[in-house]
Amino acid sequence: MTTPQVVDLSGKRALVTGGGSGIGKAAAERLAAAGAHVTVVDLDPERAGEVAAAIGGTAVPMDLTDLDLIDELDPQIDVLVNNAGVQVVSPIEEFPVDKFHLILTLMLEAPFRLIRRALPHMYAGEWGRVINISSVHGLRASPFKSAYVSAKHGLEGLSKVTALEGASHGVTSNCINPAYVRTPLVEGQLADQAKTQGISEDEVIEKIMLQRAAIKRLIEPSEVGELVAYLCSPAGSFITGSSMTMDGGWTAH
Picture 1 (cartoon, rainbow, N blue to C red):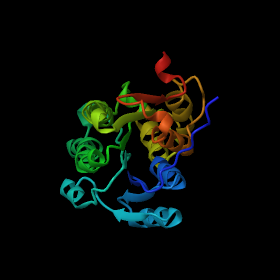
Picture 2 (cartoon, helix red, strand yellow):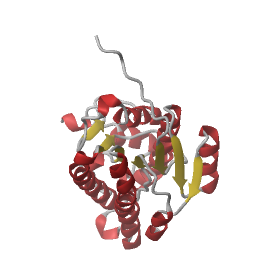
Picture 3 (cartoon, rainbow, N blue to C red):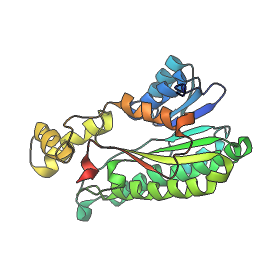
């Protein structure tokens, strides 16, 4: 019988985008608990500071849509968690073009720039973990989310290319694909979805968010954080180029 392996990231440096709340906060907390020094990047300076202070990490307030700022980040990154995102719910013919551009910049171009920034250090150390927080919408589509679905599908492709290029250097790259997680981003969709669909917010949860899942509940951020840690563990070392679904059976249909 083999001895169960724990996640030990002592001496490793992690960077988590959107780390001030939701999935990003949970990932930052879990990686710090495993021993990593975590840089918490978030648009909100107060939230970034609170999370970083609580875990003994470093807060970096940053608007990731200003792509040139990414080149100023410390490139000594062993674990990169691309998590930052926003959502806009609107029919294509009414979708604000500036919001489409913003979402693609934040959720696809910024991850590319961050991966590009981190890979030389990972290659030099012959170890690295790129973890992209995708979505069930990286594998499936829903109406009224053209920008978000496009960005997540693009992130899936970027992750796979990173996996192929990084394999010989000890670097893995994977996507985590949750369904609806109990986060401020999801809670913020309720009113938009209710207005777009002409139903109540309670009906949005029941008839839209949970309708396709076999397990009828929202995912807790800590559950996603645990999978982030697993992908950094010795047991996760052969997993690369994958899309790890946490969708309660959504994609089983």
